Length: 160
Image 1 (cartoon, one colour):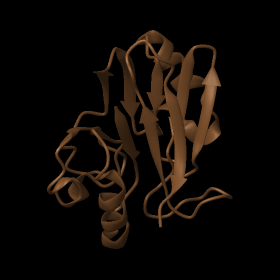
Image 2 (cartoon, rainbow, N blue to C red):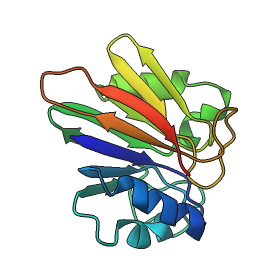
Image 3 (tube, one colour):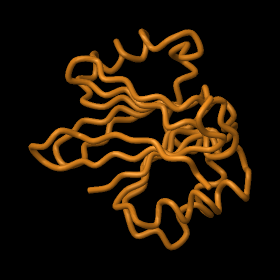
Image 4 (cartoon, helix red, strand yellow):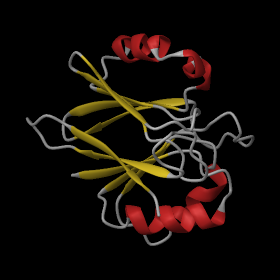
């Protein structure tokens, strides 16, 4: 199962169009907030499962602040990240992941793409589809390859 991990679209229609093309090949979409109003356009015609959380710029809060999704036996914790001070490190979000027994912790907010392996847990920030702050990519999208009884493969690609 190929899962797209998208965050921080911030009502940028060009970014949403690019992300829409990138997720077309995926079986599921995990949206990490700051662009809830983009979800309808982003998922128009998308055949896979869609799970979303709200971010600090999503004033209507149409989705929960955090959620747990189980895909192919892997427990995935999703949140935007602002409530866990991710601008200053990922200790708080790491411990939240441990509290909820997550195999994978996903967050956005910083616009900086990152994958970290902490023991048996993967922590990923896919960056931002609208305006990245990472050195490598201006815009980025994350992916998870999730198969039962197999290690998860996490990777980030430039969105262009």
